[in-house]
Length: 73
Image 1 (cartoon, rainbow, N blue to C red):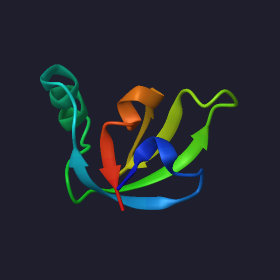
Image 2 (image 1 turned 45 degrees about the horizontal axis):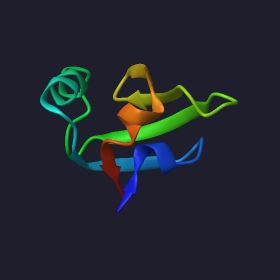
Image 3 (image 1 turned 90 degrees about the horizontal axis):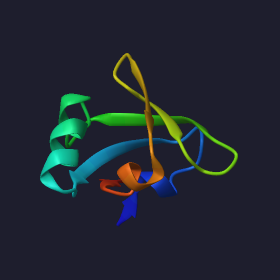
């Protein structure tokens, strides 16, 4: 299964699962990154970190290791 850190800029995906340690999982859920949510990857920094995404009407920046914990389709 593909993870959010493997998605290209401009792609829209759906979150299938969040697989992280409890503290990070809680933080991601509080930001609205839940199963079934649509996510659009806006930009990826030149060195690959951070990744800017849109969830609903909110723009977020995630570190690559945080994005790697989110399985998408």
